[in-house]
Image (cartoon, rainbow, N blue to C red; front, side, top):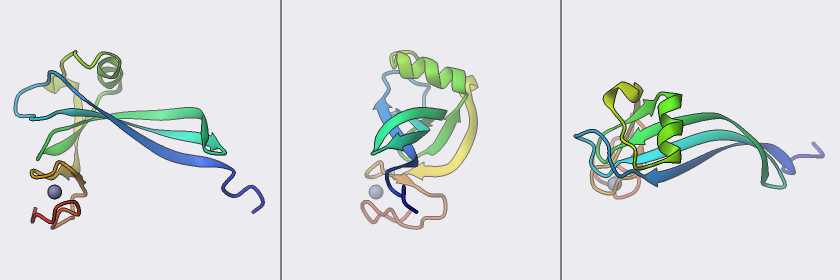
Length: 114
Ligand SMILES: [Zn+2]
């Protein structure tokens, strides 16, 4: 197709460290995922924002959208367990902190057995 690669839809993921979060979540990070429409790789429009709480060595927790937006704007705000919508199948490596799919047996980052 003629316009191939000039514009399209892609998924973008950004993360920022959090200051305070509920217990049992060492080194918390807030991950924001969205779809965006780009033209020559310049994002023109973003939508479908999703927020996740990533804890080192623990499951990825999907946050309720309102809570995710609030903490994304002011990362010093805390996240409570009631802000969590569901637990995702993805975890992070306890050694290097890299995100893992649920069916991985070994970490692709450092090779540790999960
Ligand atoms: Zn690792």
